[in-house]
Amino acid sequence: MKKISVVILVLLGLELHAQFNVFSKDPIINMENFQKQTVHWGYFLGFNTYDFKFDYKEDAPEVLVESPMSFNVGLVGNLRLHEYFDLRLEPGLYYTQRNLTFPGFENPRDRLREVKSTYIHIPLLLKVSSLRTGNLRPYLVGGVSAALNLSSNFNAQDDNSEQRFRMKNWTYNYELGFGVDIFFEWFIFSPSIRGVFGMQDELIQDNDPQSPWTSNIESMRTRAVFVNFTFH
Image 1 (cartoon, one colour):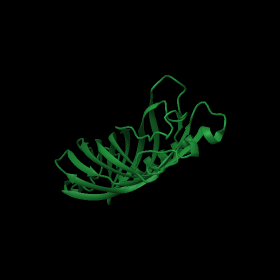
Image 2 (image 1 turned 180 degrees about the vertical axis):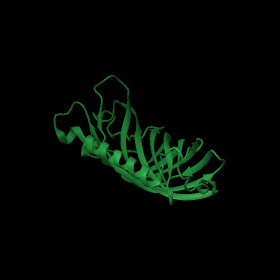
Image 3 (image 1 turned 135 degrees about the vertical axis):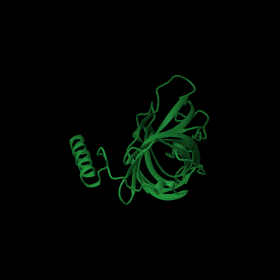
Image 4 (image 1 turned 90 degrees about the vertical axis):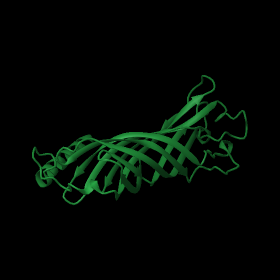
């Protein structure tokens, strides 16, 4: 798989160089005035891995988190503030799954919780771009976000004793990342990577204060990595 990925990247680089002169020393400047627009739109496709950061009341074996890769899709609205500063709204739909293994249980029915989530994720981001070099323009991005978890079990009365893991339905985060705008003849392609850090406890405790699943958990916060491919 790694060798295939390397070959694909090499072939993509050669294709970009040969057909679009993106990486050449004196490239043809593509879409020179596009980013001077006050407002422009786009969309993104990408991948994500979601995790949890647990804090505990007492030292004890920790909850193990497995984070399979999932996918996301959304829209981009870009407001130009300055030559180097843009304000971005990037609402998207994020599908994810986290597999939690709780310590102290022999029965897999009690030990494992598959936490499948569908988020409506709404970040407001400040994009800080560097000087454009040919058809490349790196940037940093950061901001805050709110996410509605459509699969949170927020209103459920059952808890882990009935195999139901419950979370708060709204999550609030801060985000930091970087990327690069690559200017082609007819569009801009922007790969980016971004870290997402939850700011509040998202766990709904079990009904039993002595629950073997949740009683020792002080807080549970989202951690995530997004890899997005944006097209303008």
